[in-house]
Image 1 (cartoon, rainbow, N blue to C red):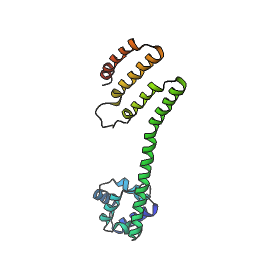
Image 2: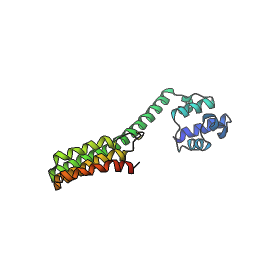
Image 3: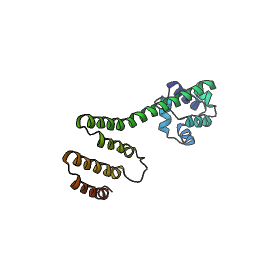
Image 4: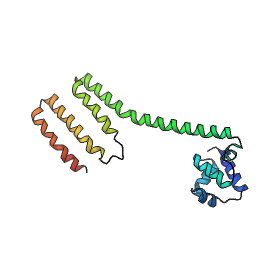
Length: 180
């Protein structure tokens, strides 16, 4: 929040003779939050701005921008655009890491180990990695079949242990029981 807007908030509150505790109770925030707003350290949401304006008996445009409604709209538009851009950039960074890593690993397996064919199975782990957090099954329980399959393929391709290697699939129920 800009210091100017915080100063306007403080001046309006004092002009209307409203205590911080009364104002905070009326709009549903803590007294400390109002202190932070008035000092320009944090910024209320649009809904909180509107609640503040309503509680102090002024219009939000007068409260924020000295009466210019166009300036208020641009203020909120810029704030929302900035918040959306920050959220999208965090989303892109977080979601790009795992697929990039898997692609790099696949290319290394293909170039240095000539394992192009079994390497593509790495890409099957990407949907498991991005399971929603609210999904009822823990991620580690769903990744165990993928890891076991990869171990089986490594045993088969590198050590030619296809026949005894299949016994490793018995570990899947054990791992799921163990990680519950």
